[in-house]
Length: 150
Image (cartoon, rainbow, N blue to C red; front, top):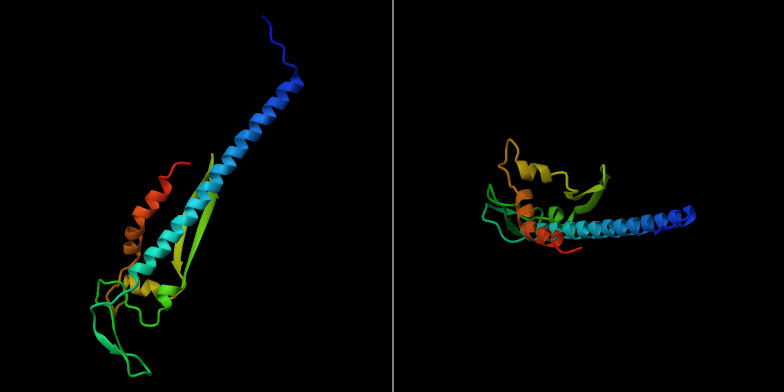
């Protein structure tokens, strides 16, 4: 038995297969980007939780008002005095092409210039670490997001 396939039919079948594969890959890429965006949102929610609440440090007077606030103690996440650190964060999804696909990184960064001073401390202030706590708090949610079936 002989099976004859002309060249035009073979090219058409190959093009259809290529189209199906490219469509499937595009769909997976869109789902991966969607999950990365959800992971950034999980980081942002964890950041809001870590940077809220009362602290156990010294009590200071707020200028120019006659009210007071309690600062954070060394080793605690920073206390919120103005709310700027807690509210000014940018979450982005960064992609870069690799050999057979692409790599996705989710980034959450503070727009406040003093965030690094609080995280690492200075010569006059002990560190108030919060970055690792945000990552730890969001880790379970991010694992759950990425372990969903495609």
